[in-house]
Length: 280
Image 1 (cartoon, rainbow, N blue to C red):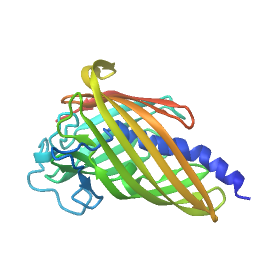
Image 2: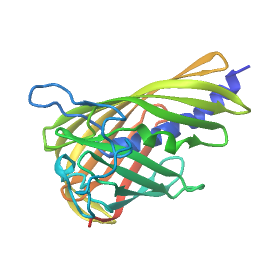
Image 3: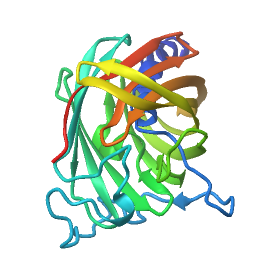
Image 4: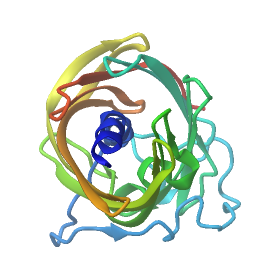
């Protein structure tokens, strides 16, 4: 009796989770190895902007602090980027804003131009190897909701960094996140879900990229994404696995200017382009 509800929910679950995945992947998606070849490791409570610690006195507006300094993701209080997203279930836009910059991390606030006014607050950490997204899709603050599905995911473990400190042509890196959460499907069917999302990235060259925000000389990065989720609904286990590829372009002093994401399960391609930005 669970076949129809599970099939219906999966139709919505995949593109929603893909949207979450591509937004993270578009921000970099990886963890470089250091000179010893060991991968950097962190966790959601290890110094991110939402870890409970007050920003240091050095976190003045316009400050770029220590390990948070990264030319391909300028970490500055009040910096904003507005992107358009086309080619998915529906077209929309979103604006990222950086707040609470400290020596240990910062907060990335995202506002989506979608019905209901979805907001996402995501903790990031700063370490010697690079910038680290400490939460998948912003943690509990970004619950997923549609007519057929409600789900809330928490990040339980993070390895790697999202944007390496010394990003350059020839760089390669990986990142992985463990997630778990609760789901409600259809008419009150509830269950738990656990999964893993991982990224492997390679900086393959440089290209000139034109968007509504201007023309940029950018590093081209190719990213492989793997998503694996197992939901247990009414005693029935429902695995969801899919892969995707992202090509993203980053301009020094600006950040990500464009990305194109393709996933295999539904065969969709989504394009994200920078519309405007302001870096104090």
